[in-house]
Length: 110
Length: 112
Image (cartoon, rainbow over all chains, first blue to last red; front, side, top):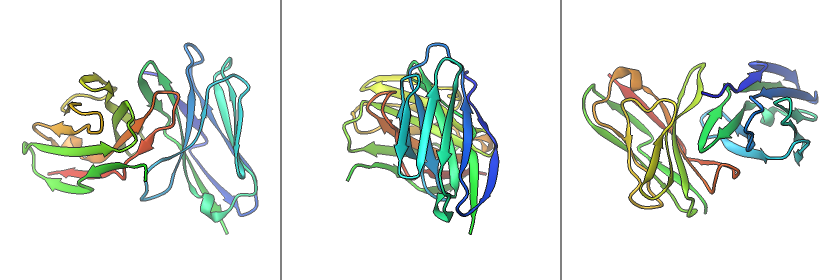
C-alpha cells in the first residue's frame, strides 16, 4: 500500500481568493502524479498528469507543480469561483496500481 | 463521444444474491480499473486489467471477481454480496498509468 496524503482535508474560501493545497507521496520509484476534480453527484475528471520533477501545468485558473525528489505536488486555484467548489483528488500509480489520496474538499463562498 | 458506461447506476439487493456491474469503454483503452469509494477512505482500487485476459488484484479485492474477455468490457462480479460491500463503485479506463483516467458515472450499491 502506498501512502498518498492530501491536506487540508477541507477548505472554505471567499469568491476571488486564491488558494492552494498539497498532495504528499513516497518519492521512490516515481512514475506519475495525477490530479482529478470531483464535483458532487458527478464522476472524477482529470485535471493534470505530471511526470517530470519541476513540472508545472496550467488549465485556466488552475495550476499544479511537482517535486518528485521530496514527494509533493501543489495545486493552485487563482481567483476562486463558486463553480470551483469540488473535491480535488491526487493519485500516484506504482507499477500498474493507482493509489488515491482522500481529497481536499473546497467550498467557495459567493 | 469518448465515454465509460456503467450499469446499473443504482442497485439495492440482498445478501448472497449474485450481481454483476457492467463497464464498457469506447476509447480502445488497454487499462481498466474498478474502485470503491467509502466515506473518509478515498478511492480504493479493487481490480485492474492491463489488457484482454490480464487482470490483477488492487488493494481491496476480497469478495469481488472481474473478467476481461474483450478490450472494451470489464464487468465487476459480486458472487455473494455482503452488507460491507455497500458502497459507491467507479469503473475507469486509460491508455496507461501515465495517461489520465476516464471514469464512469458510478454505481451506488446497497446490500441489505
